[in-house]
Length: 367
Ligand SMILES: [Cu+2]
Image 1 (cartoon, rainbow, N blue to C red):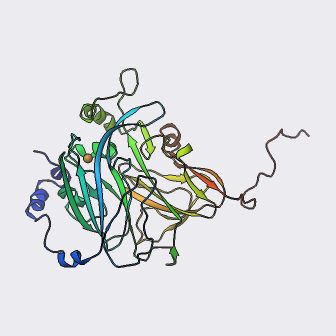
Image 2 (cartoon, rainbow, N blue to C red; image 1 turned 90 degrees about the vertical axis):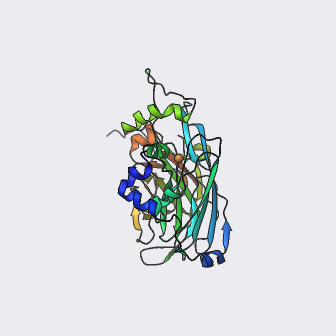
């Protein structure tokens, strides 16, 4: 049988991996057992569970639980249906926050109402395909994986089951982000502390919805029914939708993210499959960890930043003017035509010094 491991590693590496005990005795279980434990309830994006920016205690074991939810969702104003696969019911899956040196203990559940097997590959984790090799669960099963958060930054997690199933599960919505903060918090290039008042998590998805002969989007009874047609569209590499948080308009209008003038916002942006380029229209990235890794000093004053497919980046910005800001993928075709647009609604006092309409639009004076 052609397995996921063979697809990614080749047969020789598969044999090596299989020969290793899955949970080797290297970890000091007594020490880990003595650590404090914290159960964290996850919240749906763009929001993020409450967390400390600077850790007040030593390392702990942070417990998360995520059910996998396969469901049909609507992804645009036209009512286009999509066979979604999700972590915890949302696209992207929820963002988790821990500190460097903490242990992440993830219980992943695959309810028996799902027809498909799933797993989780944490880019923040070391070994066993990011945990993917130790977490494959069939419908009706659950598994618990523990890994040590040894590197700081924002890291994608995603489903990576057998062979050809990997890209299908990822572009069906199965990805999210974990943020591993330095124990003493974020720092600028001089080593001075940076803090945020709010954090928002924007997950970008490229979606591939098959069309019928008339060009209308097709609907399917089940994920399995949609598979062959979907893979054909995927192989063309041109998405039919590029959306933030699972659907066109998921973060605009009434769903806009909210902030106040003077507030500092951390925007975490992930894309598990395809490159993208976030841009805040009328604002900037004051400090940007484009690759999302906090051991590197942040870039300053960026206009647009690049998020590599398979990564998450973080941008810190203090809002200076009120109004509606569009936050877009600055491939503007993807932003406007395909859906990759979000809004921030910012309240506060307008600063004429930063911008003023000196003369309103009017007729060009005749000489
Ligand atoms: Cu999956």
